[in-house]
Length: 215
Image (tube, rainbow, N blue to C red; front, side, top):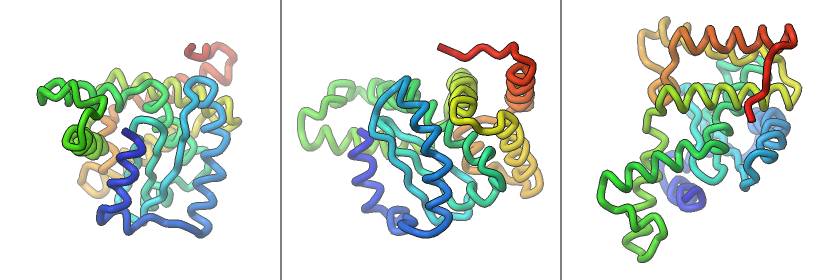
């Protein structure tokens, strides 16, 4: 499904906006590398990174490893620790198969559960259509909480500042408040004050030696 998404995405208008070189892409790859290395220990799939030239603050992941990040989000993340927190969160959605579950649920609701195995060209096209819609689907609070926990785990393993996640969450909330609009990222990744507080408490527990890594 991930491979099919990449193929269709590259054919789309957004595909023409992919950044293929330059310092911003180099930064994305550098920051992501230790995060991906840590995630592979839990779920070893071919993770890939794609940078999109788009001022909208957004990032998303699809089943099987592809992670997409907008330049707008990278500009908001002024530190590598903040950028790493978003990447760790997105990679966690892949590790915990959240998007794959969404795809399965969508197929069942549309009465096309059998097509998940791509039994015909028409079936494959139907699955691709469902997969392409994943970037606009809202994750549940449970999925978000779990991705925060595992994302924090990968931040720690990669050696980033554990305060980066709470800092980035706060920046996103402040940016949405100032613009009086809901950020694209927040439309699919619901952010509440409780999530920010949980990120702060998680960092505090790590610093005082009481944090326990999720298994």
